[in-house]
Every structure is written in structure tokens, then in C-alpha cells.
Image 1 (cartoon, rainbow, N blue to C red):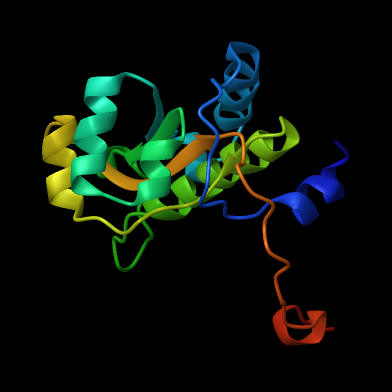
Image 2 (image 1 turned 45 degrees about the horizontal axis):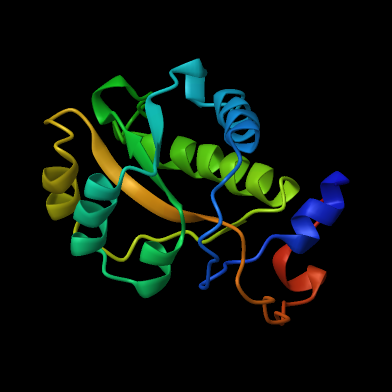
Length: 169
């Protein structure tokens, strides 16, 4: 799929078929994730592609959205704040910005593979980390179901370009 077609096609999908995600597609998504840039190339992230039923159940117990349970794979996006670049002056960890870039690589690659996804952050982070036994140095920032869409996405209304992008000369 051509790059701008991928961007136009990518939607947040909330209904999934049970069909398995092809291993080759997961491998290509993993490579897209690996190539995502991070501040100072710290690479303070990891993405877990969870198909294990017991671990999926733990995730869904903390984030009980029906569509998360439907997808054959759940992507779990985690950061290690202690390894992240920190902004000078306020010492703010940039890990969540980096992870946003990483996850966008993942969901765009998934779209190019004909797969659907949906960013999910509606869960208690401490409970999710406990369920996933992440330890003290990693935290779960986002989830995404990953699989084949069970329904066509709705057409979205978007602001016009002038409201969201300005060229300042």
C-alpha cells in the first residue's frame, strides 16, 4: 500500500474477526517499530505482541473493552522512564513522546498489512503494570488490539488543513 493511502486508510477499529495475525505481518510490524526514532536514540521502549490466552485475560481484566478481547493479538506498549532522554531545564522524561512515535509506526505498519488497530489508554496504569508483572522500571503507556477488522470503519469528519497546520514564514 502506498504511504499516503496507509495514512488515509488508518482508523481506530472497535470490532475484530478471530482470524490469526500472520507471523510474517508481525515480523514486518516489529521491524517498523524497531526503526522508529527516539530522542538521542535511547530506544527506551518495548512492544509486546500478546496472543497468549492467559496473559490476554489479565490485560482484559484491567481494560475490559469488548473489542480488545475480540482481537487475536494485543499490542502492549511500555516505556522505561529511567532510560529516556530528559528535557533540559525541567528534567521531563520524553519517553511518552517517543512511545507515541513508536506506536504510530506500529499502527501504520499494521494498516499497510491490511490489519486493524485502535489506541487504548483507558485503564489504570498501576493495575495494568501489576497484571503484566512489569517490575518497577517499566510502565504500560498504551494498548492496541491487532487483527482483521470485522466491520468497515465510519467516515471521519476532519478539520480543514488551515485549522491544523500553518506555514509560518
